[in-house]
Length: 500
Image (cartoon, rainbow, N blue to C red; front, side, top):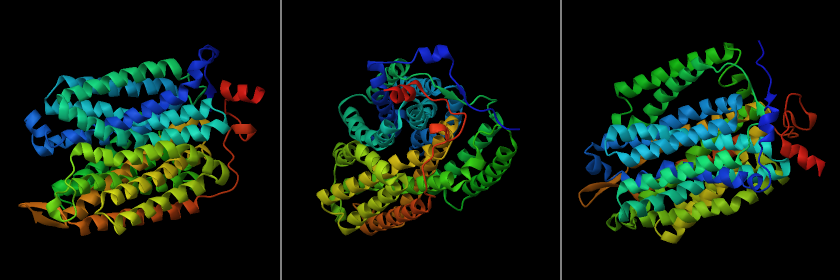
């Protein structure tokens, strides 16, 4: 049985669409929300060394404040993306941001590690903000404005990460650590209000019954997979728990795949995913996520290494954050350039170029990782390549899927990035653990270990470039646009632009 086609929002909903100032602020508001989401993922990092003392918990338990957010974000991103296509993107955006804000308030009110971990699970819901926002931009903006807005939205991931680390470090250094969560709670509440004010109701929806079985199956499979990947280094890659989790992931995701092919209204349209124009960008997203994340992980550790190591600079966490700041600023400045490259050459070329630039950045890191200016240069080049690649990935998805599946398809793409980042974290940890030398009685990664990491990340980036070049080209006929396929309900913005 075919799933029902997209329907427009009701005339009443359309009548509530913002105009004037609110319409002009839709893109900045969504970019603000995307940046805050990325900030939320990094604010806990400066706290990790002190959290055992502050909470009375073990270091292993404290690490779950990062793992819990990663797992919940990976699980909820495709689920909330599908819900956005069905029930309205603004409604689900409000829900995800409200959950994030609630998590911040809980973190600000407690010092119990169990409650902190549960609150971080709520904060992980904000990971769905980027795919939902990209779907809103497709619905609301004409093509000539959409590419630059999508590029900016994609860049917020790196911008927020670059801003979040030094800002959180300053708060932790000069104020009570709970203040950091009060600040993010206030920023989150502001985001909820801005979404309700400036983001219009969804003009395109895909009605039907929500696939609860598919959502639970995907959640169980992803939890098994990401838990094994993220904890493998700590528990032992050959340990019974890790092997059991990997086996469970294979079995559960295999059953889930079969169920998705049989259900009339699946959570993820696997037949659509299997098309090269959709599937290959997902593979590229996984590889790019791996290559990008290694830059953040390794740079922070490298510059904080003690000077006695022979290569380290002994920088504080605040100084480390400032080293990453140029990369975040370059992502902000380069996003409109990335959009122009995609408009003139196509997003496939932009993706391949971005992956190649990432690889070149790691080449710089291999050439010199002792001088601070060269470290910052290499990290910034990687960030610039990430901007190009991340701006192209949603553009490729937009050109390959129907309008009523935009949020769910981009949710899967973001999920693939997350899996790539988790894999990157595991590989980086494995390489550095096996290449250490004692410094002051403590094991410290060697420079050779870092160079191997750069080489691995650069190789993965080149693989992403090769995948990008295999994405089918041809005319970018977006389903439902300009009469290409029926069923696409055009937004008021589209009609207004055509009428001018």
